Length: 242
Image (cartoon, rainbow, N blue to C red; front, side):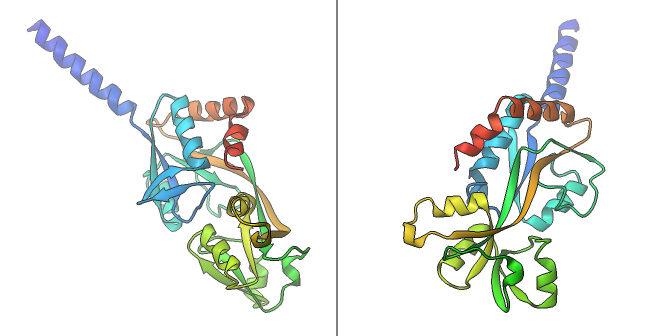
């Protein structure tokens, strides 16, 4: 009997330990494109965020579960505790508070650019009656008054890569892209076919939001990100995709 009780106790404790060490759930926005993430058959398989989030989980002894979902569903997933970590988000983009989550330190800066097929210097306020390539659901604070007044019109595509492909195909003359996506798009193109930065629209610090709950190693993740920053791991991940 003592041996049986010991065995049952061991099974209970082992089960509790396994539950406590479940995979950490990270959200992946399905409108992102390389170099941030490559999505294949609904799974995030490579890219900056895949490398970053797997490394974050490994630093605290967990696996990373990368949950691909529409951008509009991420907010609901945050509010219903369906995800533990949301990375690649800026305080400048979030309208409502996340009282159950804690912000990490920024791990990069995103530059949003006005892009064209020909080299020039041009500000978006100089555009008139132009269609501007944008990502569906994305907010561009500087451009919102221009959209609202009708001075320029949005032409949405589902992903950032599709926005640049349509620009390259001359579906419109100008588009908005972040600098990493633009560099990735241009990397294998001939000089004559490259797209060009015309001006900077915004520059935002990019961080993670981590759920503050007993089943999430919140403080350990925050400390791990500080250690990664100090060790140059963020820069090394970004450099692999430049």
